[in-house]
Image (cartoon, one colour):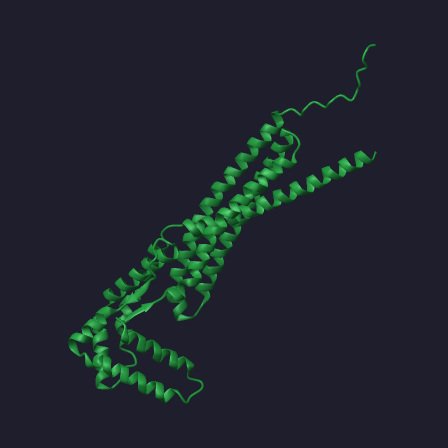
Length: 316
């Protein structure tokens, strides 16, 4: 009787463990598909460049540079040089190059940190009026002295330091610090995705290991694949909901900046959502087909014969 109770406890514990492993496998499937989508969806930089051009933002560069002009002769000459160099075509080339360089650096296709370079401005200044660079240094020193007594001038100090650094360099701005978060997130997913896939394979192995017969193994593996295939449809629902939420937010906003850049955000969201939907649909169908195969194997697999408990007495 004690042996029977212990056997029932063992079977119940096995049942709980297999169900827990099945649940983990099903829950992890959409997450793996999402990580695969974020890691291997191509065309993000192309989409971003195309949508930026569609906003006509480059055509507004001359108007932007014409705002807030100073009456100082040096400032006017500096502004004239800036306007002559930074044309809409120049700005578009620089920004698109920066997008490609940033994308390559974030995705580990390049080890060179991205830099926005305006060295043509310094070249033009050196050709037309080299003393402007000295004037900028003088202005920086004066601005520092004027803002030093003010305890609330930290932001001003940062702006002044940035201007001084820009003037001393080839008018180049490093943006690797601003992109470190995106790069670290991408690197984390590159490590986490194969680990998660390995854990899912281990879960399937343990489910099979805890089953005592091939018929039971086929049933549990079929159930695991079926649960993952069904649960995958929740990812499709969430993907569609994310697109609708972003669309609703951007279309309902009255902010001019949001309206300008909302098409870019929508296109990027749609790019990832479309890629995720395709991968998840393929995964759902594959998982359900695998479940049918395993269930069919379980049906056609016979249970092992039960060992006879009758003792054979030897003839004397």
